[in-house]
Length: 500
Image (cartoon, rainbow, N blue to C red; front, side, top):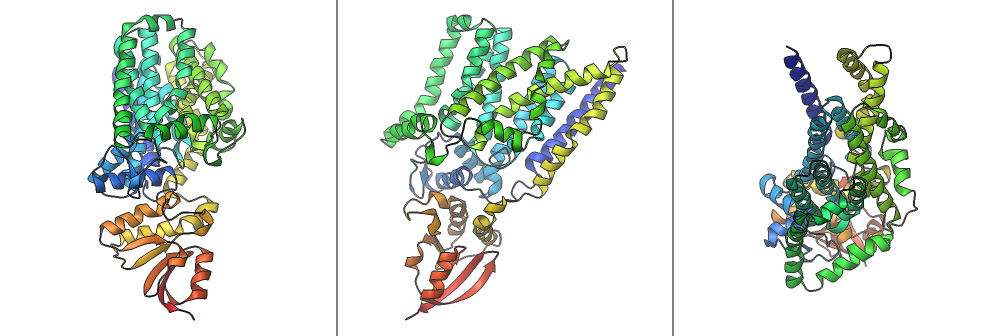
């Protein structure tokens, strides 16, 4: 009877977490249009893969993309999903949402098996799902490379931990497999997590044995082959690609602030404390875990400390800093939070009672909803009512308008979108327009004749779309026109003739 009750309790707990995870990770995932920079850029890359059937030399605007030089594993997956689900936000964001779900499932089952407890993995999953930095823009609900990278980092970490403690070579091979997949997702970014693994290997006095293990060297060779083939073939097909990788990813980002993304040393810590991680203060209590009577819990939380803090240090000293580069921290911090909260609640629930599993479970059932209600509520509100940042609303209205044309199956003829001058764009390098290009590409594939032009190239007897005040002023001063449609700050003009 006891086993049946335990199974039923586990089933209810697991299904509850799955329902919550689905709501937070997948519900209304298509509501916001594609976001500028990586998400929209990758979306255009995926569209052009299907259009040109070119899977090695990734292109943007029909030309080899030497701005987004990362290997294309994510873009390949997005292109496949476009084949399955059509061109839209779902295909671009689904790989990230599935990565988020995968991270939650890995933590849940790996922790449950290792610490032999249901509450520790449940707390870890709740911590992830309540972390704004994990879920919000550039997180697991958006089509950036970082969620998929984080998924592979979690798999690397878990398999390396198992190898260090159980000495089974299959875990070592799995580590190299996921290291290769992570590299094919975001180049050398995964290697910023490797120093933590080395430090833990030194702490466990296993590093020398690892280096002496022939399977370690076989794994390195397999890794080089698994990753090197792509770089080699792309360099053969597009000479200069490796130089671009060196300048943009290896030397450029770590030693120089790319695109002006220079921040101070406390950038990530401040972000975690002020907005991105609700339970940062519990991290200060994490040493209590080492008083737990669960030896395996102490081992896994110490591993999380080593890997998490080493990664935080490395991204903090890197010159290029962007808020979402901290995404791989959240699974490690979730393990720390789960160990800390479990140890504290277990201690408090046994304070005046003999060890009694019912009392302990009752304490968790009462305390956890109180602890997680507020952050989970905020995340669910964002899920059901996703909004642009207030300073971005005007910027994205034209994306909303173009998406409406796609959803309503409109065919636009002799139509132009005016390039906003304040972005300092060149007509030949429209990377900053990727959030709009994604939708104009769909319209063109359905028979529309629409393209981007500077305002100076406007012609009579055409239709122009703009949300730029300088462009609107130029039209009013130089053309006789009629506003045929308005959407927020977007105006659609029919230009009849030039003014004398």
